[in-house]
Every structure is written in C-alpha cells, then in structure tokens.
Image 1 (cartoon, rainbow, N blue to C red):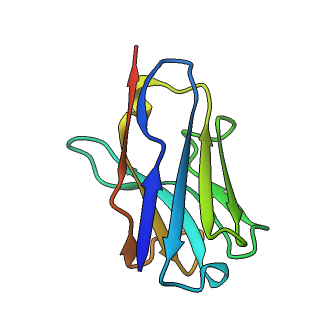
Image 2: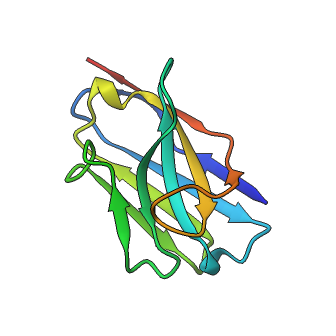
Length: 118
C-alpha cells in the first residue's frame, strides 16, 4: 500500500492550502480515508475522514467550517481543502486508509508538512 500525500507548505494565517493523497495497492473505493495530523510534542489526531462512498464525513471540532475533505474514487485520490488556516494548524499531515471515519487503519502515508505563520 502506498499513500502519497502532497500539497503542504508555508502559508500565512488566514490563508489556504489543499492537500492531496493518491493511493495505490488497495481497492480505494472500499476504504474510508482520513487525514490526521501531528504537531511537535503532541499525539497524532484525526482531522477529517470520509467514508468509502463519500457520503459520510467526520471532522475534528477544531477544523469544522474551515476544512473540507473530498474524494475521487475514479482517481484514487482524497483531498483536504484547508481555509482560514491558523498557526495551531501547523503540523505534519498524514493520509490514512481505514475501515471507518472514526479511527485510523494500519496504512499511513509519509506525511506532508503544513506550517502556518502568524
């Protein structure tokens, strides 16, 4: 299984970024997909997840109304649109393939760094 994340970078507070993750080695349409993040010194946490068919999503309270997760099963891709970014969003963001929108599966991507400056 390979989960290739991209789209991270440095952005000012209030700005936007779009993360993408391309999956291979799995039947993508059978998996819930999630974005998790880990800030320095903190545990990895769920940011957003989407069900296999795209009809159900789950967001961390801290990102509701600012982030949107979406998927394209034809392209084996899951994306995370991040708007109104805050310095506390700074973290390494990881793509994950799992069985539900409430918790991660065993397969992780390599992570992409998002840095939000104040």
